[in-house]
Amino acid sequence: MIKFGTGGWRAVIGKDFVCENIRAVAAGVLEMIKEDGKDDKPVIIGYDRRFLSLDAAKWVAEVLAAGNVKVYFLNRSAPTPLIMHTVLKRGLYYGIEITASHNPSEYNGIKLIVEQGRDAPVEVTERLEKIIEGVSNPAYIDFDKAVKDGMIEYIKNPFNDYIDDIIAQIDMQALRDRGLRVLFDVMHGSGSYPLVVIYHTARCTIDSINLDKDAFFGNQMPAPTDESLALLKYRVKLDNYDLGIALDGDGDRLGIVDCTGKYIEANSILCMLYYYLLKYKGWKGPVVRNIATTHMLDKIAESFGEKCYEVPVGFKYISAKIDEVDAVLGGESSGGLTVRGHIHGKDSIYAASLFSEMISVTGKTPAEIQQELMERYGSHEMSECNLTFSESEKERVNEILMVKKLLPEFGVQTEKVSYEDGCKVYFKNGDFVICRFSGTEPLLRIFAESDSKAHAQVYIDSFKQFLNI
Image (cartoon, rainbow, N blue to C red; front, side, top):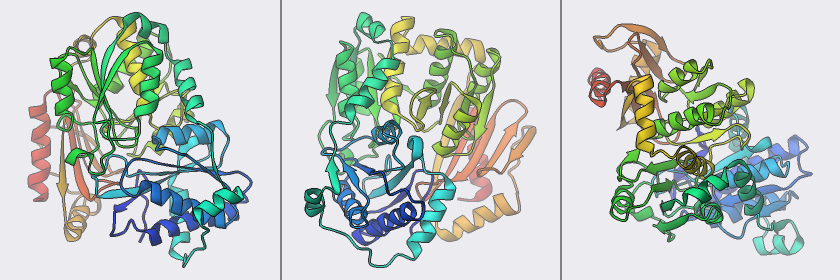
């Protein structure tokens, strides 16, 4: 069965991510388009640098073209934020990106983007899943023939509008005046071109590592984590760069390394940028975070007379709440964020540019800004644990947490418990711990936040022992 999680449909290549299933997804999208009378506008299809991505993009295009729906196609790999931006900018109904984002190299997937450049909401993906169940032997037309017939069109450089819109929102003069030296870890992904252009336009020095296409992503996860950025951390410190920047496989998650070679966690990036927009740029408005993201954002918002809104995991919930409350910023602890006035999905290329603006305008290092935040709002340290499980274990854990609603004895007074997205325990001392099943991988994720990683780890260990997993 084809199921869409928080980041689209993802599956193992050669097992479930195969031509038959890919064409079935395309046929399902085609049927939705026809049922809704939305076949008067093209569908833009993009793809990342994973194994089979270009082929899969062509298979999707062939099905849509056979159904008389025109396709905009790219002649090079592209980050997911670019496809979202193009759907928004050109007023399209749908966009499709072939990607498994930060998943291991054996995965690939399909991300559906809807009007205004948004992640497809749950009601759309559930409807698509039901349609796909009834798909059998979808028609398709040869790709080259569809290009010749005009049903598939290679569109002129969509990067131009995307890059120009980011540049228009960034204080480029501040970057020019600072003259940053940046080392960029492409992580073998698809986000290199627009970010390099932006930094060159700002007269910054930017060098790159892991720029080549590698289907195995250097034998590691294409996600910018403390562990995966060991080379970036080493090189930034060794060669005296001002900043190290890394993007995940499809360019929507951000990793930052400061001039000392220290990895800056995504939670800290969110807090620094929100604080910068309020204090230094004078913006006003609330912030949105998901249920597994730092509560320091709540304290920052409160200190400026604003509010922090909590939503389930999945960027579709963040972008929807941003619009509802006119939030300044929305983000998640996994490294994705967006800012008011930009696209409705996470964009690490924009976020990296804004982060560079922040240190250029303030004249402070990331460590100095982090220290300022800690002195004002206290220490907020997060630990996390990812556990694999069998199907029987998943049923057992779900029964314990979500049906019987049993909890460990934490030894700390509980304020409340939420079951909106997994099981989240809020403690009266301001700490929290959350246990939930991943929507993109077969993992049980446990996150905890306290005044130190050691204290946070105690909450995680309590959950692990209680669940015996």
